[in-house]
Amino acid sequence: MKRVKYIFLTGGVVSSLGKGIAASSIGLLLKSRGLRVTVQKFDPYINVDPGTMSPYQHGEVYVTEDGAETDLDLGHYERFLDMNMSRANNTTTGQVYYEVITRERRGDYLGATVQVVPHITDEIKRRMTELARTGNYDVVITEIGGTVGDIESLPFLEAMRQLMLKVGRENFLSIHLTYVPFIEAAGEVKTKPTQHSVKTLLEIGIQPDILIIRSHKGISSEIKEKIALFCNVQTNCVVSAKDVSTIYQVPLELASEGLDEIIIKKLHIRAKRPDLSKWRKLVKKILSPKSSVTVGICGKYNMVPDAYKSILEAFVHAGAENDVKVDIKWISAEAIEDGNNISKHFEGIDGLLVPYGFGERGSEGKIKAIKYVRDKKIPFFGICFGMQLAAIEFARNVLKIKDASSSEIKLTANNVIDLMEEQKGITEKGGTMRLGAYACTIKRGTKTYETYKSVNITERHRHRYEFNNRYRMAFEEAGMVFSGINPDKDLVEIIELPSHPWFIACQFHPELKSRATKAHPLFREFVRACKQHRKT
Ligand code: GLN
Image (cartoon, rainbow, N blue to C red; front, side):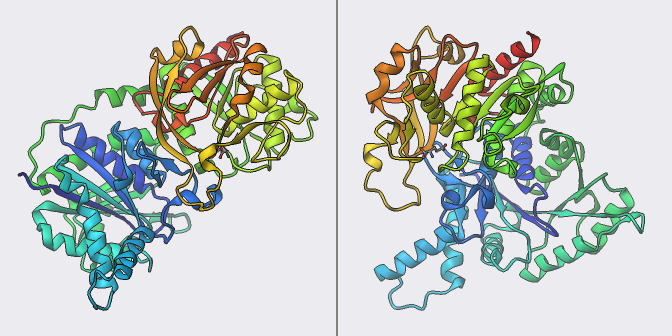
């Protein structure tokens, strides 16, 4: 069997340098050379997964096909590589300790003192090599979350060092992503933070092979030489990654610096020349749209755009396919709660998206926003909580069921959205929602069918509540069409209003399946409807 090559990506100096984008870009470059690649992320926090964290803390929770609640970087991996990730692609410190402590309680350690080295690091190494052991990959890229120097990520770096010895230097590559700031007063860039960050790695026993240098405007060859000298790296292995206007340019930037060439040389990989033609076309479309549309997003996590990461990216993909730029206007659900002046908030808006959400706060504002666009025939797209609220709005204002609500918001005689039978009695919070991919049957003759052009689809879920089937007939009689149904449990997955130019809402999360070069059909058609709305 061919040896699997390991690439590790660590980050230095500051967080938010775009390690996830860098890992995805490296993955894309190697994949486009015909290699079988996967990317995994190791997160230093103690939570077993981000599923229990607030969107304010962690941004979006990315759900995989197999129902794992994971870090949002896995979304980038999927979008860039056009591949499904799984539970095995994201490990947290919480999972590692959980596993080791469970074994200890079982008595597996036979009287030994259980320690960070070797027991925790052994479990980390087991996970670091798990995907490699499937035989499905030539290269496994591992992104280590956090910044070098953090107390929390130390065991990951130690495991990485041990693994380097185990698999051999020729099969192991360490890439460090760092930052070179421009100091206005001095009128020059500063390399010292990078030197310090590399020094910290060296103290742990890891010599980076390649440095990817983030900076605002790029770095000169003199600066590259200086960094190479101080950090003990070959000059051609100091790769510049300056700010670009879209994340989708990053792979092309890194390719123009020769990064993929350096990687395959250092790892002794034989691979064909990369084919990036599709990707170049995408970037061209993103950078030079023919026109624009404005989509209003009415949510309650508006101040943390990371909370809607996949939705925002799905709009980039859908915009590219429609030759438009999708501008986002954030509409605060709470600001329109009193119902006054709604039209002011909707000035210039070509379509409304109501995204996922939890809890009562902001829900009445979202319901008012949905009523407004339903009345005014402005395109509407509801996702998960957005679909549930669209159902409540319809029940209240069309069926005149005044107390219609979701039992998540308020218990009334008419909970048109209610807890699923199997959710009743569940008290544990972690990993207990309806999670991951489920089948959905699309009704022919609907807009939904025209969109998917297929009867059998699967989509990813993350919710506890469902449309209450007791109300199905009344809704249908009033003109609502249930255009997508889960065939196994007869659950409502998609609703649409044929009397409206574009009013579709789904119980699942289509944004999780949108890919850079393959926009999700619902996003693509929603943006098309917005374009139509702008024209008229
Ligand atoms: N809070 C709702 C539920 O749990 C919707 C969840 C969501 O929007 N992802 O069913």
